Structures are given as C-alpha cells and as structure tokens.
Length: 252
Image (tube, rainbow, N blue to C red):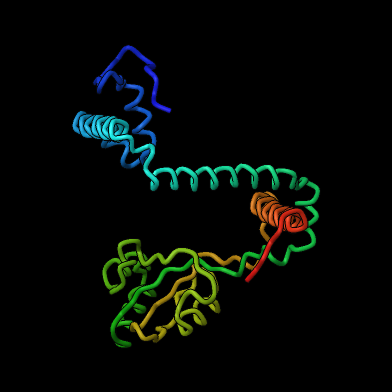
C-alpha cells in the first residue's frame, strides 16, 4: 500500500505522489540513533529526500512495466506471505505460555546457587621492570610517598594514569602469581614485589568482597524471561507434534 498524504508540508511530488515532512521523519526513525543525527541535518535530509524520490521513481517504473506479474516478484511475495503468516501463527501458539511471580520466586529459592557473586577485590598496583626498582619504590612508599603518587611517577602500566587502579576483579582474571598475592593481602597493605611475566608488581588492596548471592530483584527479570522462553518452546513443540497427526508428513 502506498503512503497517504498526511500533512501540508509537502517536500516533493513524484508522479502525483506527495512526499511530506512526515514521510521524511518516519524514514529517519528507521535508522539507528547515531545515524539519525546525521539525517536531521540539512545535508542529511536532502540526501534522504533524494532517496525517497528515487524510490518513488523506481516504483512507478516497475508498475508501468507490469513487473507485478513477474514470476520472481510473485514468488517473493508468496514467500513473504508464508513467513509473515507463520510468524502470526507462532505468536498465537506461544501466547498461552505464562509465568507467575510466585513461580519466579520459587525458582529463585530452589536455585540460589546459580546466582552467586564470586569473591572479589578492588586493588591498585605499580609495575616495574626490575626487582631493584620495585624495592626502591616500595621504600619510598614506606617513607611516606602515597601509593597513588608512586604509581603515577614510576609505574609502567597504563593504569598509572588512575593512580594504579585496576578496579574490581575476581579470581581467574589476573595471572596466577598476581592473583594469589592480591587475594592474600589485607586491605591497605602494600605487598612485597611480586614477579610475573610482565615484571615486578607492588600491590595494594582497597576493598574485599566475599562470595554472595544476587538478590531476587537483581535476577527476577532474567529468571522470568528464561522460564517463559522454556514454556513457549514447550508449547510450540507440543502444538507442532499435534499438527503432525492432522497433516501428512513424509520424511525421505
């Protein structure tokens, strides 16, 4: 079905068909947000208007050439109709699948172990390329140089710009030597130099968090979606199996 004239702000007329500002805005909304910004500029609007004009010109050409009777066109229309009709049918089949809030809560209580937050720490480090340099920087820190200032001045890691801050991490995210030393440290204590494949590290732990279980509110959305999807799949498979008794299926 062709577009209908919606507003008085007509931008172009192609063979009697009006292209309005509303048509242009509707086309812009089809693009991702980052691309929409370009098409809202004068240059972008003109480019899109040219494309809409070209679309109408090619459409009129196709109509004049009776391409609606083309076998390829008819086959594609039939394939599209089949796909759309099937999608509508599937939507109705799975629509009966429901999940209640109580079922979501029961699933969470029965599977709390699935929603564990692993042990984690928040730490900073200073990376040096020799044990001698690491010991010298450690001595400066012991004598009062703030760890963060030492990181900015001496560290070879890009994290020096953030005072050596590595953020929060769990076991398995760092190389073993670094991880073992970091997780054994007490909060606020600066480690002895720790050797890894990258060099020598001075580590300071800022925060420790033990294992915990995510709250129900944190995971209820994901649980509900998962249960609903499972039930929709079950309903779909159940219904299609019933249809096999209604319609003849031959597997060759």
